Length: 318
Length: 318
Image (cartoon, rainbow over all chains, first blue to last red; front, side, top):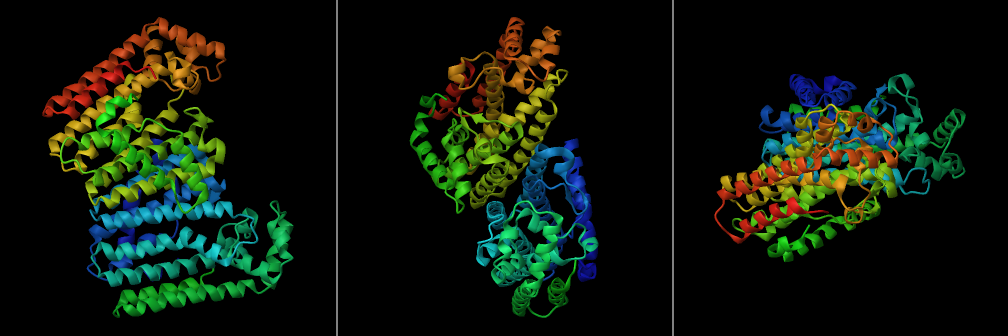
């Protein structure tokens, strides 16, 4: 993420990082090692950033926003470590996954542990509406993951299935970060709702962009080979769009084992259908919706930041 | 469990069962199937029973106790389904595990899903102290599981290591069930504390008894072959006691692959050391402590039930 977008919360994001590091110190050496490894793997810390920015909308109180920001990043980390077990992933962001290094068992417990620790932070806020929203989102995130698992290599799924999945995979937690950030500082219900929808639309655009980049990004910038969704059989918007336009492509996409040549060929044929451009349009539509939500907010520097973030998502190439 | 002990909450336990069944109906067919399978596998529903009984101590309100009872059973189920992945178990209580039937991936998500759904119920109670206590217990339960994993086949661990593990594995959640049941009906802090300690001591005795039965139970009553701890390398109180008394036994216990003959031999040698009797004494000590806690409570029929439950734990043979 372009960090200049987070200028006004830069210092507090450093506090988030420090607190995250502190949270990784547990009474158990293996969990500490596995969690720290995961944390060092980096990530954009988008969820903490959205919590803090949403908190700026109203009565900014770092003492309430910090635990929330840290907790949401930990929930995100928990899903990642469980997903790596499920996807049997060997690397994430260029470094070995917890699963590759410590095995499935430690990964499951590290995920459970991160989630439960996050819950302690959330419960300490003393606002059970926040706990409820987090719990509901967690339920839906699980459902999305299973849905993704069960729909791999299914070339006949609908766009609606795809949108359902990426909402649960990405948009939900980003949306929640925005909403809870506003709620934690007692923003008016309307502002919290605005942030919820802003985060939703932005999250949808973010995942669609991710799915486009998985096909056409510069591999060095992406940090991994392109085409991983094709290899894993995850049907993304550009892939589904392409198979509608070029139905013969379905056979190749459907094929469970693909050589590097075949992955390359599939990408070329997907590009040729214009599916990339079409998917970019859908992402842009979501970003427009996100920006339109902001109209409900009074003008402020944070509102401007939210605008810039939406513009950035549209043009990011990593 | 001898169900006559739960006579005074019999009807409400049926409501728990009905609500548990309802909770298993999710929007996702695979999760519904896996969760229902787990639920049908049965179990003693000890946690719900303790929630309800503790609720009887004060201002019994089923509308508050029911979601709590159901939630704690779901947390327990979540730990079971993750543990089965970790232990690579094929059966539990005589039927196929979720892992054996649906694989690791579904098991991980089913566990996450159950935990998050339980959290929704807990959050709806609107008492963040309850959420906090549950979160803290969950963290510790994870740590206990990792500790157990890492200490398998370690014949040189201390009794303290063992007590640490069984506290996290069993006593914590039973203790929490008693404590939260009291808290949910606004029992005085002293009564909630009494229930917490009663549950702890009872839970310790319960697990020690389980560990004894794993060696010497009637296999039909136990529903599985004896000696599974020896096979998995889980060092229990009777095993550790026996290796102190007969140090030569360590080699056999330490051996990772054991034939059925060797398991039988190990059990015979353990019995010969008197470790079973010694372990029973330790369990009895915990039960005495549990009963002593009850002195803090005014006389009532529920107090008597708690006494009877403690007496039953000591003599149960399944």
